[in-house]
Length: 355
Ligand code: NAD
Image (cartoon, rainbow, N blue to C red; front, top):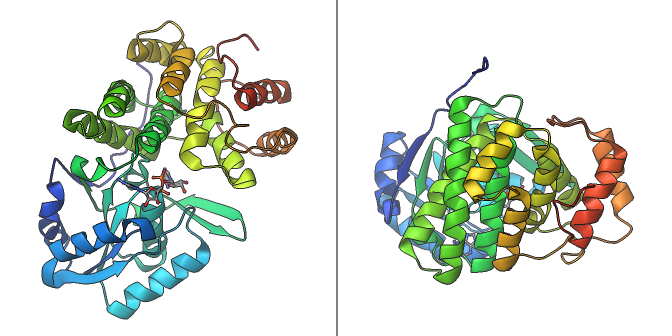
């Protein structure tokens, strides 16, 4: 066993079907007396339900969370929270809504209770992101880490199957990169292996039966573990490429992760035998990259970057940005490697082909 540093993040988690009902207890445990509920416009109705659970402590719903947290939205939400005098924000939704809560907490120290309804994992990380004039700035700050998280699988039953699959593979990507991160540790590897295994078995169950209680519960548990891995380690090539692809071409976040992941796995696992062994066990396959890709295709993810709208002349721009940007990775990545990998992801060829 190698030397390592592991820093546990201060976080209280409540998990279980209908755990949302215990929200008032969580608010009280934090010393909060009145809270604003954040949602996207699409989840405003759920927000109203959450506000009603809060009873007299509810200060209403702010249903304006949007993808990639536009700076103007963050400012308006911060003003709203100050106006109603809330001492806590409850973010109910996916990574976009958690992200809005973080943007508020970043400059106000207001605590967040996160109620995740996708598998993106943002609730487990001290990473914030705000977009201004098409440029997304990100950073790490302990103030944005939610103080409590309520995982209630019943809230994920309505997550469309296609979104569940791409969001689940987004979570798997966090755990895969945590396995070979420079700051990996044995406890993080345990979480990553369990998260990957549980998510890969939960997604087919959800696809067959979207309301499956066991499938939804396993997937949310796996999302928690994968998010914790993301929060504790430094991500590599996969996250760098997806960040560039999403930012440059406005591609959908989870779809991009789901498509690119097998190609980065195939590339990096050749240099990381320990991570490869974990993924071989998790997938039950000698070629985990192909296995993850085939699973995604069977469950209906888009087959290629071309299919989700990446322009065919966009490759050189992604390569330029990836070459310019520093990031940690277990294997040195040359410009030729990037060209081969991205061309394969663009066309949707077999990831385990030698390139
Ligand atoms: P999202 O939050 O944008 O949600 C997508 C859509 O699904 C929204 O309309 C939302 O309201 C809806 N939705 C969410 N849960 C639902 C449910 N259970 N039923 C029906 N509809 C539901 O998508 P996401 O993939 O969760 O988050 C993506 C964003 O999160 C990106 O901006 C990404 O950068 C960010 N992110 C940040 C971190 C971090 O650590 N900071 C980690 C992961 C993702």
